[in-house]
Image (tube, rainbow, N blue to C red; front, side, top):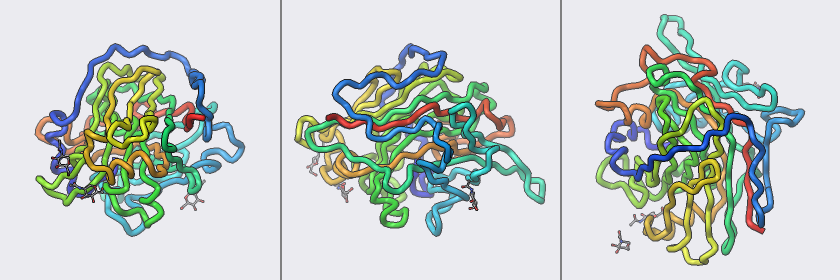
Length: 322
Ligand SMILES: *[C@@H]1O[C@H](CO)[C@@H](O)[C@H](O)[C@H]1NC(C)=O
Ligand SMILES: *[C@@H]1O[C@H](CO)[C@@H](O)[C@H](O)[C@H]1NC(C)=O
Ligand SMILES: *[C@@H]1O[C@H](CO)[C@@H](O)[C@H](O)[C@H]1NC(C)=O
């Protein structure tokens, strides 16, 4: 989700660099509680029922960058994040993140949206010899693809080192993208970002930046609840055989091992150190542009705003193996 600002020029090879599976997902029509996870303790959870609302567990990220850091959140995305209820609110114990279109004084179209990160103190690592699960129940907007060009919802994690050192150091700090979907596609990407990236090909490092390493799952019905999760598995106690697995509706879809990343330092940032959680809907940027023919600049004039292009989150939690 984050990236060097230059990343948005070079996501074109993206589709060839990730492993894609076509699945017939089992849609969850109604909101569902998290499935039982025998042998795991739930160590953190939010279902938007707290009297303090969103800010009980989360900080808003506001504006167009982290304070003093790379513009447009490092991805080329064009929206301004706010904490206004038109962009981010809780309704009936569901979080809604909603992109909104506006106009500036000169009549130019502007976009706003919402982005959250779990508060300082809310960050988790998988212990050696154990597993950790991070999962959320999410419904993506059901508007047609032409109306969602440039809309980029995401459920992801960043290494806590990133914020501890002033929101810098990407991609070395590690990024786990649990669910990203762009342009209204019935497809969910799950990617890792790590290592080094010098802003230009060919120095792409162990995570093939700026594209990242991982996979995508097609056939994801929009306008339906799905659970998206990531499992970090350190039970082998050997970094090369440790594994990250993306799980959708309880089904394991794709994985990456330490030996595939082939860099123990980069792997440790991704799977041994503490990470915090982010939820957001971006508009425009390298990823949505990169999946369009000719790397077309999104959003388009056909792109609409409102809840039918937004993201809803019913619950999000972290489970650690006992
Ligand atoms: C929203 O952001 C503004 C500007 O930073 C701040 O003054 C206000 O307290 C925030 N409101 C909430 C609910 O966080
Ligand atoms: C391995 O990862 C580390 C930390 O992310 C990085 O500094 C180093 O350059 C990487 N090594 C290679 C060969 O890419
Ligand atoms: C893995 O990394 C080692 C040491 O940096 C290197 O010699 C080897 O070629 C790499 N293997 C692959 C498959 O990239």
